[in-house]
Length: 573
Ligand code: AMP
Image: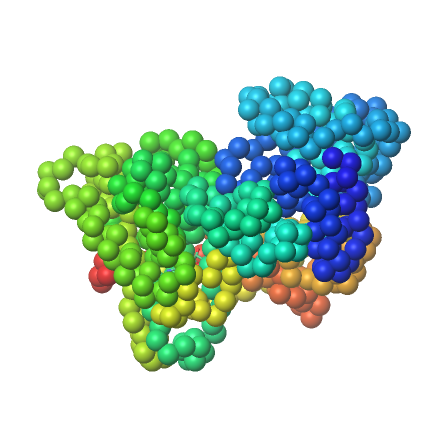
């Protein structure tokens, strides 16, 4: 473990990407294959291979307590160290110092074993005991990196893609071969073993680990969008959450765009997806869905982040899965095929599954696909996103209006000849969205940031006007430059009304213009609204607080965006 920690130190202090890759490659080559494989996983900031469902579930608060116990340091000393470094691993090195063993005895196999035990233990107490038993044996430098690995963020400026490059360099293979094997097997340790043994071509798709999502680039206008390629396939842009469905027999897992396993949040989708086919990975969107129509995102939001979903909530906010792409089906790796082929595969899949998807009996009490506990036992839980062809900008304009008419966000415009670009945002998929108005707001509270922003007030809570009152409506931390944040941080420090340590209530003087994707009803802030994906566009030095936007304006935007007009046709036709 000491050699891995030393390598991490060297990687962290090298700014050049190639230098980092060379250091990791040298290190991997110098280790046994088994140790190199474990290292590859840890260097990617993971405790287990990506495809594993196991997690440690030991968070910063538990580690904080362990470090306090091991070092005997006071809460104040720990807080000061954390504030100085903005990173618990770095603070650990400083705090443990002399208190940790000076000689390293910890092997990577022992670390791996300890991780397995922690993952298998149930309950915070037993997990914390095992984590303590691991950290007590570590040198201060080893503890620094163990803490970072357990938290899941190494912060040494090394991405998994660079670990892939290092593997290629260490064993004389091509980077693309290593990347492909890793994408297929979802285990960078196993990919390393394949590379070391010249067996990369033997890698086969393994289900149940998320594959990088293909993403879209924004297009400003229909004309711009159309300029990108000649033949476009057009779908509605649904305002739900993206989900990759992995299906093998009865087993189904759903992964979000952030690679989280969200299966348990959507139990009613699982039997429906399982009945679609034997072995496949579908790409699609989960939507709140009722009466053949997508509901507003604010409805779906009631379902998010819940581990257990009651039958009542399933009835209140029914969801459906709208599939628009296929990545893999029955031994066929679809990602390498052009979109036209993938669409054909999707057609075949849905045609074959049709008898199971459409319940022919008018008296049906609900089949797998029409669960009895949904609002309507005849509401489909898995649908195929309809696609249209567009050959001119006028076609796009017409389709855009129709999509909005159906209550959807806009259009996705896809190049018919494009392959599925795993994990990339390219110009083969374009998105054309509704332009939402921006809001001018005033900052009411400022909070310390994380990482390199741990020392500055960089997270801002902001408000709109409601008569003479200010009502908070959102919180944002992105959009400003480091220089602007430094200036604002100094200003807020000097104009603090109440200092809560981490958060300061500040004089409401700084006006910001914020953009967002939607205004949602929420009890998080006292305005009764929250903004979805807020980002700061600029500081409005020209605007006095008396002229900021009002609560009524927020209400107006809220009402206009989710006004779903009565569908002239079914939303998916
Ligand atoms: P954005 O979140 O604005 O970057 O837009 C990209 C997102 O649009 C994707 O991650 C999907 O969640 C979503 N999306 C909605 N409809 C589609 C569709 N038909 N094809 C692909 N992505 C879609």
